[in-house]
Length: 377
Image 1 (cartoon, helix red, strand yellow):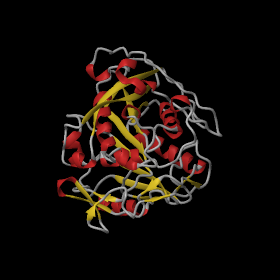
Image 2 (cartoon, rainbow, N blue to C red):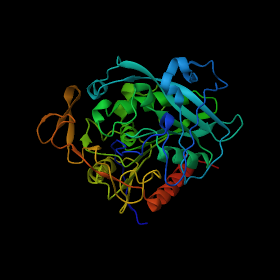
Image 3 (tube, rainbow, N blue to C red):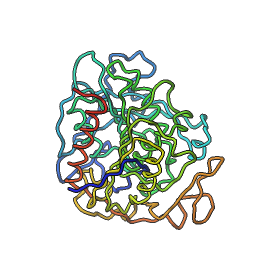
Image 4 (cartoon, rainbow, N blue to C red):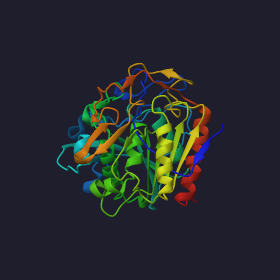
């Protein structure tokens, strides 16, 4: 597997694939393996902390499902403990988010924390942010891989508590920037956990979640919504769309950012990311973009068949060029008018496809990066 690297980063958003029909509680069945649905509401040892409330059916309703879909192939890492945590957040429009609004609709989403070992020592952790299809097989595969090298993982579910299963066919169901806020709120919760090292929490996301991961690095957004005294130790966006230019978007964290993208991706093409990567590199930021020439969108998702698979109803903004204007307005660069998902540049029918080679290479690269960055033993 060849890969091309740039000393720089890039970013975007949205896991736009059409998953197979869901099993009960949101699980999915794969040709590569069965899915195990795990539901738990066992309280943590620090139940009394306001930031670590465990899920109760009365509080969360369907959010209490907290499923994890285990699909082969994975490292099948053993974990010492799994906890479900409440994450108080808000639902905001993109305009509200960009203008610093803090009075959105309150919602409490769920996060599944997997602790790989017993003890009292503080562990590094990775927050995993799903894409437009919700928490899928790729997210759990990554969780197991990272648990296997001694990292805790915190998978957040931004959809269930909001009454969503997928935004693939209608991206207007949730503001594209809302999951940045969810990521910051997850960081606030996780950084108070007695088993987690608050200085070693990494953010990792996929497509729509990759957009949240990339742009959570903007210092402007961190000042507006980030928890006081705590920042992410690194950012790992996967197949992230980079079609929007935000105000001051070259002013990102000095922490490392590593993007992974399929060059054959026709869902969120990599070309705009290359340009953003170059801008960030010139600004002196620690960013890289790694491309896999034969990989498509969601190349790390073992639930999907190999090679390009059509996603006929999925929306794609691959032909849109967007720009933030003052007062939180995102305009379509072609029309100079406020952008909506009804604009002519929005299309349907991109492709997705699993790629075992790209998955293996990216997995090894991520593990090695985290070993070095987090100083793992």
